[in-house]
Length: 274
Image 1 (tube, rainbow, N blue to C red):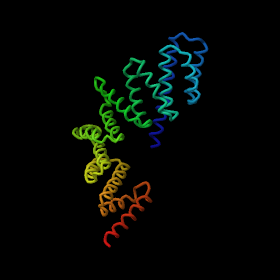
Image 2 (cartoon, one colour):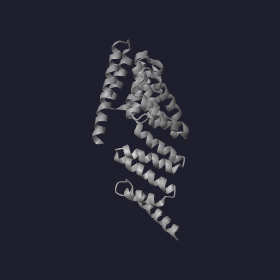
Image 3 (cartoon, rainbow, N blue to C red):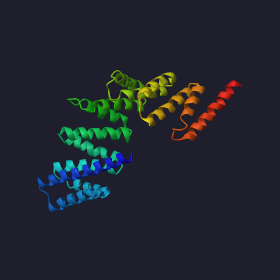
Image 4 (cartoon, rainbow, N blue to C red):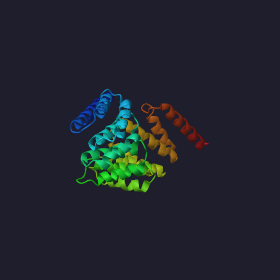
C-alpha cells in the first residue's frame, strides 16, 4: 500500500511538472503584458513548490484578467487538477473540467475531463444522476473507448446507489452474460447487494457464494462473508449465521462487532429451545 502511494505521489508530481511545462510553452506564443506574464510564472512556481492554495488564488486572479483562450484553457485544467488531486476539494474541480469540455476540441482533453467529472459526481458529490449522464456521454464516443466496460459498471452502481434496483439489475445481468467482461466477477457482488437490499436473502447469498468462488482479494472475501452471515441472520438461519461470524473472528477488522453478534445469536438460539 505504501509503495502504491509513493508511486502515485511521484506520478502526480510528474504530471504537475508536465502541466507547468505546457503552460510555459503557451506563454511563448502569446502576447502578454509583463505583469500577466510574471503572475503566470509565479503561479507555476507555487505549483512546482506544492504551494497549491497560493497557486489557486493567483490563477483565479489571472482568469479575472481575461487572458487568451489557450492560456485560459490551460489554467482551468490546472485548477481542476489542483482541486482534484491535491487540495481534496474535488467538487470544486467540476466547473473547471466543464470549461475544458465546453471549450476544447481535442478529444483527449475532453475524455479525460469527462472521466474526472463522472468520478467526482459518483465518488465525492454523490450526484448519481449527473454521474450517469456523464458516463453515458463517454459510452457514446466512437470508436468505443477502452474504459467502456468500466463506464457501464459505474452506471449500474449509480442506479443501485439511487435505489433504482431494477435498472441496476438489468445492467449487472448484462455483464453476467459476458464472462469475458473485466467486471464479470464484481457483477455477482453487485447482484448480491441488490437482492440483499430487496430482502431476498436466499438469492443474495446465492450470488455472493458465486462471487466468493472467483474473488481473490482477502478484504473483499471477509466483507462478503460478513454480509452472507448478516443475510442468514436476517432470514432467521441463526446456526448458519453463527458459524460464519465465528469463522471471521481472526480476520474481521473489528472482532468486537462479531463477538456482539455471536452473543446475540447464541441468546436467540437458546431462547428458541425453551
